[in-house]
Amino acid sequence: MRAMKVVSVVAIAELILIGFAGSASAEDEPAFNRQTPIVRAYQKTQKAVVNISGERVVSTSIWPGFDWPDMFDLRGPRFQRQVTMLGSGVVVHEDGYVITNAHVIKGAEKIKAVFSDGRDFPAEVISADEAKDLAVLTIPTEEKSPFIRLGRSNDLMIGETVIAIGNPYGYANTLTSGVVSAVGRDIEVTEGFWLRGLIQTDAPINPGNSGGPLLNINGALIGINTAIRAEAQNIGFAIPVDTLAENLRQMLMPEKLRRVQLGLVMGRMKNTGRFTGLAVDSVIKGSPADEKGMAAGDLVLEMDGKELTGVIDFYVKMMHKEIGEPIIIKYVRPKDPGAKSQTVKLTMVARPLPDGRELAKRFFQMEVSELTERVARRFGFESAYPILIITDVERGGVASQRGLEKGDLILQINNATVRNVTELSLEMEKISEGDLVELIIMRISLGVFGQVERKFRVPLKAESKKPVQYRL
Image (cartoon, rainbow, N blue to C red; front, side, top):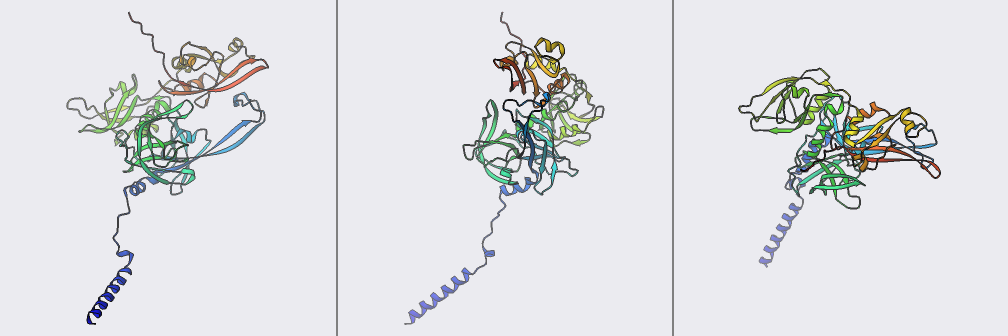
């Protein structure tokens, strides 16, 4: 009987202890650090991601088959509707320079960039390269903007964690994560238009993510999200940041944006052990930089007494320089024995407008003229008109291979209307060897029922004709 009482007391004690344990506060439970690397990367970068919205007016003819360009001023009945475009962008410089996809802002009449705190600014296109699907915008803010520094994509590891931030379906500052699925992917975005060397990721990317950043776990920019496979799940693609950096130096060069010349083609930041600076990739022959003795391989340490943060910083500062304004460059030539830094004063000079007809002949092997009275009679037109016409096409050349013919009318080059030699020259001077250029052509011919007009787009790759090599 005494043994049973002892057991009862022990059982009651256990029940009391269990009761106390069950009523313990949640604050007494072990605490884990919820701030994972993904959380830290998001907190570090999300203020530099913007939502991009644009408005574009689409005008179509009510009469099918008569979608004439505005230059012909044939005011037939037309239907107009406003289309809203959504995408994302990433601020890459504190002065308010934003990177996005070219297709996000293509044809937009008004562009707006909205930050995560609700501030919104009108955005202006500084440069766009549709062949690479990249665009640079600027926003008019007096305050320094949060920005994301360029990382590297040449050391990406398959399986490493990546983060995408963007505006999918209009849901602002949405984060998704995944891994690098593959690198070096080539995809055909539209018929005949390829993007090559892309990063493939399984981080969910949706419409509206285009133009937003792909980040590594440290919050460094490793890519620009650009495309998805519509028929698949978790297969997205991003333009590698190394490709972005390579193209930015062409898109932001003063020679590309204005008719000026300095002559420095800049690369990425480089550390040689003793010196850290911005690498000079090449120097244009006969330019001010060339005349002052600068050469490929030099490292630019300072500009106007200030260190540079990267290639974007250099070109952004160059945008504010006027012709004749002194530019003080401190640089070093690491390959020289006992290399020491030296300082040189450069100034940008005016660059004369090249002859667009000569460039068209050089890059496309075709001859172009304004439709003067004499040329109009030659090709059977009733009178002169402010438009450009192809007067000759070299057999086997770039234009010939793409089907262009004598008598074709050139309406636009890279979405810019060209009506005379000056406008042709302004567009052709932006083109370099190897660039993909899109022409809109009007071809007029006689058919069974009279005159037939056909408008079509022609992609041309700028390629100088190589001299024929003969073997002896």
